[in-house]
Every structure is written in C-alpha cells, then in structure tokens.
Length: 319
Image: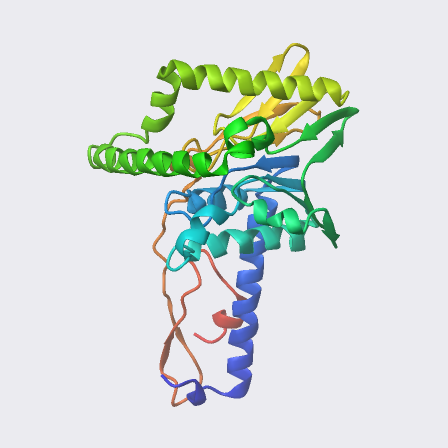
C-alpha cells in the first residue's frame, strides 16, 4: 500500500500515534532505570575487538546518575593508531550515543579521566564544556567523603617509563584475550557460562599477584599524601572495594574481561557491579500485528506493528 493512498488526516493521526507510542516507551524505560549518584567505568578499550561494548551499553540503559566517571582507557588509541580501519565498530558508536542520551535526559555530568591507552587527550586536559570535563585526575566529593580519582597507570613503571615495553606487553595480552575468546566460544556451545581464563591465569601467577599488591599499596600511599578518604582507579582490570590501611581502595575493573563497574549509593556506600548477561538481556517478544480497517475505499487493510499491548481510541473507531 502506497502512503499516497491514505488521506492526509489519516496519515497525520497515524504519525502522531506512532510518535506517542515510542515516546511512552522511552519514558517507561527511563522510569525503570535505577538511580545512583555516581557510576565509575574504566578500561572499555573502544577500538579493539575484545571490548565488551554491547554489554556495557545494555547495562547503562538500565541506570541513570548525577555523575559518570570514565576513568581512563575508554578509547584504545594504541590499537587505533596501528590501523584504525575496521576496528571502530557500530556498537562503539552506539555506546557513545547512550552516554550522550544520559547527558541529555538526566543532565549527567561526564568526567573523562585520561588513561595510558587514551593518552592523546593529554593535549586537551584539563578542559570543560557544558557538563563534560576532561581531566588527568579528579577529586570526587559526596556524603562528606573525598576520593582521589586516577586511572593508575602513573604507578605502573612499565607504562609510565618504558612505553615500548608496555606496547609489547599489550600485544601479549591481546594474544591471551584471543585464546580466552576461543575458549569461551567452546564453553558457550556446551551451554557453560563465561569464564575469564586470562583473569584466572593472572591470579595463579605469583609475579602478577605481587604486582597487583604493590600497585594497590602505592595508590594507598598516594591517597594518604592527598589527605583523602579513598582512591578510585582502574588500569589493572581487577575490580575491588575494600579498606587498605585505613584508605578506601576502589577499582572499577574493566569491560574487556570482568565486565565490572563501581556504583555509589545515595547513602555514600559503594558496590562493585559485575555484569550478568542473562539478567540484563531482555526477553524477545513477538510483536503482534493487528489488522485495522480504514474508511477509505482505496486503503483496504492496514497492518499496524506497535506492540501486543498497544491500544488507542483512534484505531478503535475505524473497525
């Protein structure tokens, strides 16, 4: 059926009804979102094939916040620099669109802290525009507590002093992630849940455990020197929420392996969020397409695909 076969008034009514439906759907989604004063994410590594961007986007659609801290390595400049062609995916753009939607709908303050993989923003920081801040580090204050926010790479002697060695290590890490992906494809075929092989290996290797412990202790010393209550970091892909020598140590994890984030509650307490794909993924429902008869001799039957629960008085008087 050609659109020209409808009367102009009918076309207008259908257009208005369609817009109202999708507006109501968007409003319902917004009302179902859970509110947190602050959400911290890091190490998304947009521009790499291992970034769990779709899962992060699914999570962000279920929440809203006053402040979203993106604590470094959001965009993987190192990987894009090698050869950006084909590495930037549609889901990476979709993620940025969701961020902009949060800023538009909830006036979310976006704080982008530089990391080592997105060190190209060193040329911009510090920079503020509207409700966006691009910084090298940040002080987060809420509920009478002060937290120093840093990506944490400055306490990694390899990434801060020997970039060439860090990039060599990054290549080895990419190989480990490739093996991890093949292993989990096998597990998925067997109906088994996701298992981070790379995380397990790091937990078993004594030098890796020692490195993480040393990294955490250095950041705790920094927090004491800054006279803050806690420190929020990323970089090592190890989510954490605990007290170390009187300092509240928080690590936002990553969206390459652990799919984790930090959530601050309204009472000032913090929680490590671990993404569960089965819980977050909405059930797919078949959309009903009722037949509606229009009072126009050339129209015949029109199939309207809104949803199985959609009803409108405009359509009821046409049958």
